Amino acid sequence: MSGPDGPGPGTTPARPRAVRRRSVGAAVVGVLGELLVTLGVLLGLFVVWQLWWTDVVAGQRQAELVSSMDWVRSEAQPAPTPAPSAEPTGPRDPTDPPPVIDEPAFATTFASLQVPRWGPDYLQMISQGTTRREILDVLGLGHYEGTAMPGQVGNFAVAGHRTTYGKPLNRVEELQVGDALVVQTPETWYVYTVSSTEVVTPRDVQVIAPVPGQPGAVPTGAVMTLTTCHPMYSARERFIVHADLKYWMPVADGTPAELTGGA
Amino acid sequence: MYAWLWRALPGPRWLRLLLLLALAVAVVAACFTWVFPAIAPYMPFNDITVDE
Image (cartoon, rainbow over all chains, first blue to last red; front, side, top):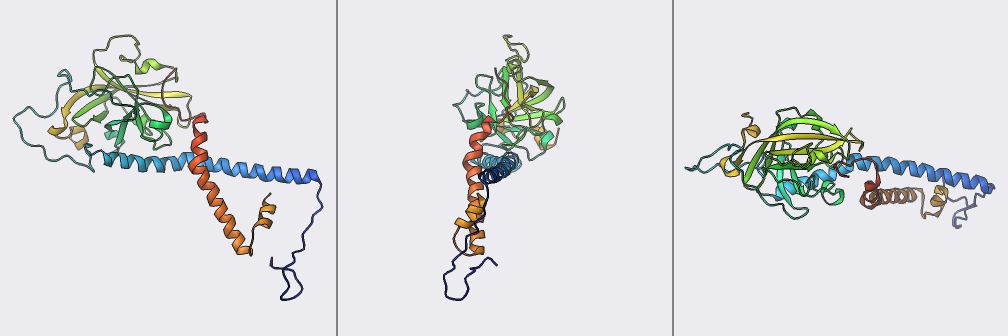
């Protein structure tokens, strides 16, 4: 079909150049059109990358991160049977001060988050820092530097993507008051329960103040705050979840009832 | 542009198609690996933290 047009066998295909006489203007418009079509295809590819590929990559990374932390207890990595002991076991009241770990170095993964409302398979790691490139796009949930650590009096504030990059907080709007947010560090479980949700502007930093909404106030209780984008696929506002520490317990004492379906 | 590319590629029709396909895959791979991650931070969505 597009073979040589030579007259007979043996001749080298002397391709007659299809010289089309086109004005310079038409040629420029033609190239411009092809460039614009190419740009459109590339923009479409960008959407595919953003909405789909970042989830694929972040999901793999998160799975590797979880399995590299051998202290994480979940359905997939259940706890060894707790050794019977004479010590008081089980849930401890939050008035009994929980052990609190020091703030780790930037980008260190130090805790996990499980949320029964989001299904038994939901497990995401929390790392130190809230920059996009180093933490939120690659490691998942990020802990606001300088805010309280899990269990500490003050506000344990955590940010996460709601869409793209593994979307750890995708179903944030399904949370209801009373739902459990279960945080685990290597030694301790901290069970928070959702107390309120709100939508604020990106500048409303008082939501991560030690006493949410009251910057400068001295905290008396341990609370937790999640921040993510709102509405979905937009950065116009922020969706905020506040939670109060309900109780804590040593990891060695077993698994919180919230995760075993007993609550 | 693409007409020129088609003429510049060597070989019979099937080879040219194969080469075009390989080129397209290479372009997509380069975009996914380097270009899109580089421009994503400048996109006006996906910010999730509160700050001033």
